Image (tube, rainbow, N blue to C red; front, side, top):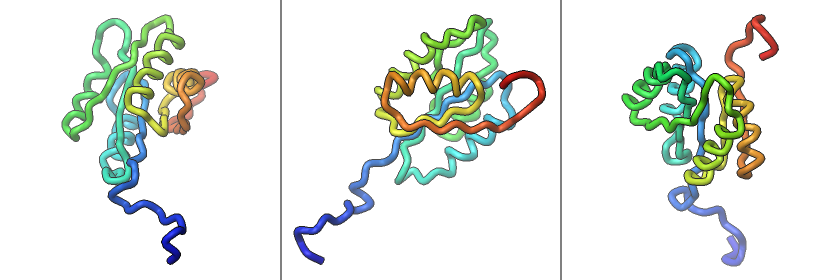
Length: 142
């Protein structure tokens, strides 16, 4: 090949793609298990995977089973402030700080609140976003 031509970098020299998964968890179950199964099977040579979830109102710590399960797999889970009044802007700013600090390339949101906060944060920080809807129900507009 011509020495002046552009060659792709060697695999070891490529930057890993940084992916932040954000979810709202009120009880450890299906969505949480699915996310943890995804992240533990992602190629760690190609992806730098991070996790974040909302702190639930009332100090009940309902997000703790998810955080503990993630820790057992070697993943730390950052928390985003949340409350009964649904502080979308406050949460989006906190998420934007994480995205900047971790130099995230991709934000993958799970659940309705994560989607809403993720859309706002993506306006504050240029990041590619993916949304996964895992459960549909006839409960309301979600």
